[in-house]
Image 1 (tube, rainbow, N blue to C red):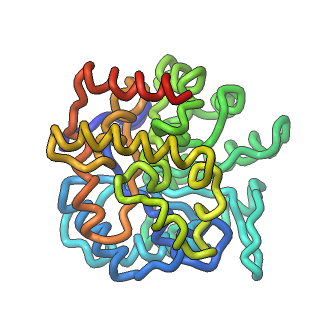
Image 2 (cartoon, helix red, strand yellow):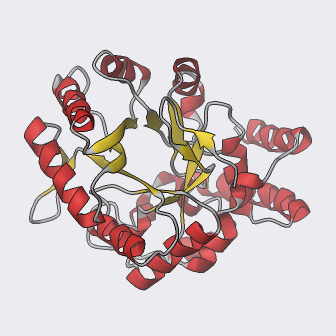
Length: 321
């Protein structure tokens, strides 16, 4: 696969990276339902075999379990080690309740825990998962702590996730930002107005999450499948998966399917390719829960949509708005 420089770093990343949210498994607030660990490791290995060179995870995914599975997958992988990106700032208690904690001591504990679970000596990109409440000085304390961790060699580069422009400006006064991780898909385009243009101007890399809208734009999601989702899948009650949005979203999938058929590709690959067209976007985080799913989406980085196809998609979205 081709690679792209990530922001101000020397990391050259493939357009698609492996996303490890769903492989955290069940039993926590934002779970995707039960997950087989062997399937997860097979999915990671297949993604790496297809040329993907980075994995994005977080301490909170599965309450540490996702990082543990990534660590196991790396131990049993015989090829070059991929870059590993993870996140801090969300903690959980004994009952699994999640809350933001961005104090210096907490972040330092999280860093050591993540390094242990991942079996790494250094984290390639360490990201604040969610910003604190507006105007909270916790942002400055957290970002200063990450800058210290970088100086100490615990992490190589620093990133933010779900930050707005004002929050990024505050962080930049303390230390450079290598990357932003925002949600971005054909269904959720809010970052196009000011966040992506700001990152492009400032040389901040962008690795987007949910480019397939949490499975809606894979081409395999149906009303029946949604109705049978277990109650421990966070998508069960999300507005994107319910009316009045569901009909429009599934109609969009059929438009994408027409384009996918022309290219002999999957619907998901078309959705990812559309995201990667934006000049501000460095890479897209793509999840897969088994090797077959990885096979169907991890090559999306080499799919190019022509202007006619992009216009077809935009025209549909304009009509459906």
